[in-house]
Image (cartoon, rainbow, N blue to C red):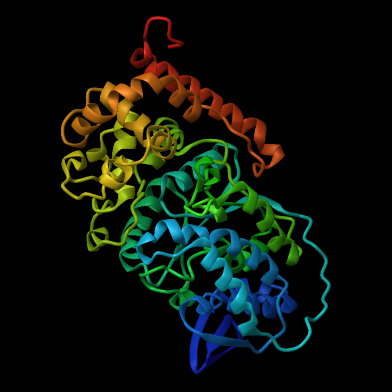
Length: 465
């Protein structure tokens, strides 16, 4: 069994994580790091060392020796990681993992993790005079753009951070091209924020080290939150992130557990560890993705023109906003058609409904077509509604013809159920109470408008529409 030694070193402008003889540094502007309380710097750097190396136990049979006491964040991290593990079973089915096997590995290999010394005590006066601003991890995706539109309408100052992962080369290069255009048109600065210690993540395969991305980002954003005395930290986690499915062993699996309302409430404890009363939540929690897409393009068109919802893994993503090769491109293509927006005007370069790439519209794969009717509609109902709305808007050809042949009749029978599910406002546990009324009012207005637009599509004898 190999021993992996992990330690940290503080710098004048950040910290270094030492893994054996290799160094991984994470830097801040000097004024940001200087303003951060000294006693918090060690806690942050040691916590980062744990969060960015703990996945080593899944990669190799090793013992991790941390040359510092166990940070308080370790328990929070273990909680989140435990409930995130089942995602690997479904997302990477080719590796034939089982949820029970991964949980067993996590439990057993905890015995191969060692810390040194007792945690130190510390005290600090919590910040109380917070400013009306919001830190937003910003990707140019539909959810973060809608979040930006909402907080601007609420007169909250946005502080945007694009986290540039070193293993996401094509995504980074496209965002570097987009940021100056966005800043000039919108008048808001986007901080290009290198996550240099992201080099510790696994590249490809099961993607170990990417599990608790938002917790890692929250930790690394703390000096910026502290410096700006930010009242809010908003992630763009919509209602979809609260759905779950059942795996072959009977485990209820949330494929987006770290983005769920349950986890976001827990993640607020990380801010409290650092004496920050900042509220972590999501303004888009109450609505599903299709409605998010509509509200963005209907209410905030000046922002919507910059949307990029692409995985960014294919080489085409270096030069094209949409690689047209990933399932995210496929999903957004049909979502845009569903709400009456021409995808070509948003940067798509070809008709994806006529693509021959078999995984672009995964709902038509042989694997998914074998699922029973109720199961299929449960897992892919938002896709199905999007295809139906696009069909009623006159879209034809390619995958749409497959939809008409295989799913139209069933969809007609379930169309009222689909509308009831996806065009409503759900609970908003992470939406700050002082903002809730205004946000819900905006959503209610947009839902009524969208239903008015699509009412002719649902005009059936005796039907609600």
